[in-house]
Structures are given as C-alpha cells and as structure tokens.
Image 1 (cartoon, rainbow, N blue to C red):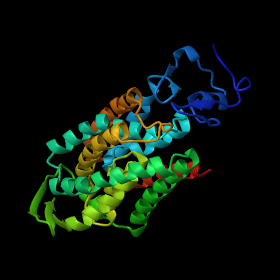
Image 2 (cartoon, rainbow, N blue to C red):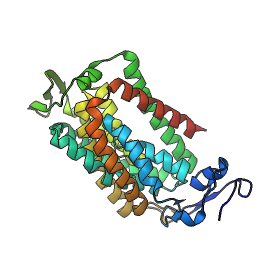
Image 3 (cartoon, rainbow, N blue to C red):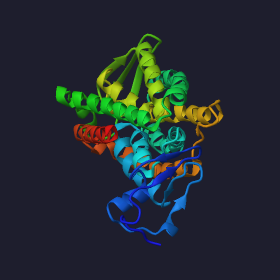
Length: 334
C-alpha cells in the first residue's frame, strides 16, 4: 500500500524499550515529508532497533560514506550514527553499539590494504589502542548513566562533529602543506620506523623524518576513547585528525593506524554494550543485522577508498570532510 504525506504527518519510532516521538526522524517519515511514495511491503522491520527501512539502503549509504572518509583514515562511523539518529530514527543507546558492529565488518578491508602497502605504523597502533580501550569503558558508563536522553545525545553528537570539523578547518586555514605534500607525491610509500621507545618514536616516510612522544599519544587516546565509547566510533575518527594537527604526522601514515586501532577498540566496545550491566529499561544491545548491512557496504567502500587515497589531493579531501561535519553538526543542534 502507498501512503502520502497528507495521510500521516509524523511517525512514532519504536525502540526495544521505549517509544520516542521523532517527527520526520526515519525513512518513512522522510518519504512522507518530501511526498515520495513508498511501498510498506518492501520495508524490512529490524526487531532490535525498531527501524523500518529497505534492506539495500544501509549498505548503500555505508559504501558512500566509507569511500569518502576512509581516504582520510577514518571508518565513517561518525557520519553513520547521525544517519541512524535522524533518518532511521534509531535513538536507543544500542545505536552506539550498532555503530561499533559496523566497524567490526567494515574496517578489516581498509586495514588489510594499508598493511599490504607497508603503511601500518605499529608503535602508533599500540599507543592509540592502549589509550582508547580504557577510555571506551568510561565512555560506555557515561552513555548509559548520563546520555540516555535522545536530545542530550544528539547535542553531544553535534559538539563532537563541530570539534572535528573545527580541527580540520583550522589546519586548512593555517595553510599547512605538510600533509598535502606527503600524499600528493606520485607512487606508494612505505613507513620505516627508526626508533620505537617509551619516550619517543621516530620514523621516515618519503624522505621526511617524523617523531612523536608515545606518552602524549597515550593520554590523547585515552580522552578520545571516552568520546568514542559514548559516540560509538571506537575513537579512530577523532585520533586521525588529531595526529595530523597536534603531532604533525602525515595522514598517509596515520590512516592505517587509525583504522587498525578502530577495529581493535570496536571489538571491546561491542562486548561492553552486550555484556556490561545496564538498567533494565535501557536498550544497549546492538542490532546485529543492521550493523552487518552497514558493515558490508563499509567494507567495500573502505577497501576502495584505501586504494584511491594516494590519488586524491588531501587538502580537498579535508575541506570536504570539514564541510560535511559542520553541516551535520548544525543539523543536529536544531
């Protein structure tokens, strides 16, 4: 049966534990809003999340997002969560866990590609993962205890995206060409680690020397892990731009480490949301089917993105990401 906007002006989104009135906050309501007819017989009902949508939509959206974001070294989960909140209408805390399920499926493709090209900086992977793992535990507790309210969580999402967009814009405004120059050179490059100690790590990439303090990296990763545990992104999406702007590492080198640490942290995050204690009225379980569909599209998109990254001007890529983040953030504030 087909519906029109005049028949149903808004839609109540059902979650596992509660009902949230979310005007135009899902696929059905969006179709009604723009007068696009749809056939309810073709929609699939996801029992855990309460989402009603077409089976082809999650992988398609995830492919498009991850193709773009993986070239900057992030999985795309930070943009998938706003999509789930505002288009699919998935608002329970389990949406964070579902985002992490996406990472479990999507990130191996990009990580494998970076590993084959010799661009996996293992000291960075170790420091970032060691910091984000305890941070995710803290983030889970904050999400369940203080950010169960839909509007409060949407505001948190908006501020995270605003900060990420601000960091990218600041880097572009400063006119730093270090990242752009490193990636725009022709041909593939391998990372050579010269020193890997507790106090310093030094590496060579395409003739340029870089160094960072692992202790500072650990502290930054711990803070990022808290945010990632709340948001449901594992932390890699925030770590990548911070490594570029604060530690002055080339994004071509950071990308592999960010994706690998995201995969490892997401495993821990999903386990937390599934097994850790939570109030009986709070739905923390991930929607595995929805997450797997997102992951399938993301897996293909991230693999292709990792292959294309060295052919894309990094300044243009960062500018595009910044615009997407800022627009999405403003949308979620109102």
